[in-house]
Image (cartoon, rainbow, N blue to C red; front, side, top):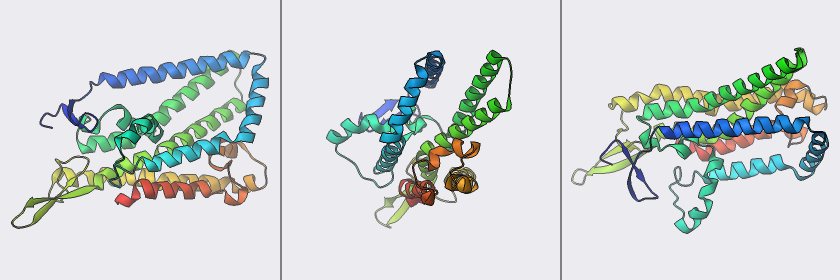
Length: 303
């Protein structure tokens, strides 16, 4: 597109004006409203006499049906399928995609779902946002959990070690959940800084040049200052997400391995149950293996 205030929309088959920055404010308002509604609903239900019976029945149904493993299978499947276009160049027919567009939310690509990449700014700005927004989400969620613990302490009139431990367990569970859900999409956004496409620029000499697919204004060459400037961002976020997050999960599972196998689960193991509860003790680390599979299919093939 000629104007910096526009981006190319495949749906519209042409250049479209970039949405205003107020979209982020609307999104933030919706998230806060939903979180507040959920919090007050939970507090109201928790005081009801029938809540304990309903929660016990819900636990029984969940243990029999297994909602969590089914949720993981659906999310993992779609996170890999969503890479067919941007990673493998596969384009599905519009008659099919119109029925599956609503599933884009499962990719947990917050920036891609709310704001076009081309409207954010330079490729360096996009990398910064892609690598930092999950950390901001974890911090905001942690602040909400801490505020909830503070309110609980003020209402009860006394603070104990149990309240502190339960708060820390919730913080750990939230961090694990966010990292698990966003890892494939964040890693894919990071590897966009290395995904180039070659074009023929001179039919006579056969000269070809490679440009960044995510930003065709960036020449994939060490002589291009903008492209070479992406190296520091790329390697920093590469070490943080595709490398350190799976390693952190592995170390965490190693630290609770004896507890899980002995069926004497303590606080840390309970807080990280999202990673191991669906597997037999002998396959405690399978979630890390599956995470490596998703990373390879969704992003590492671009490296």
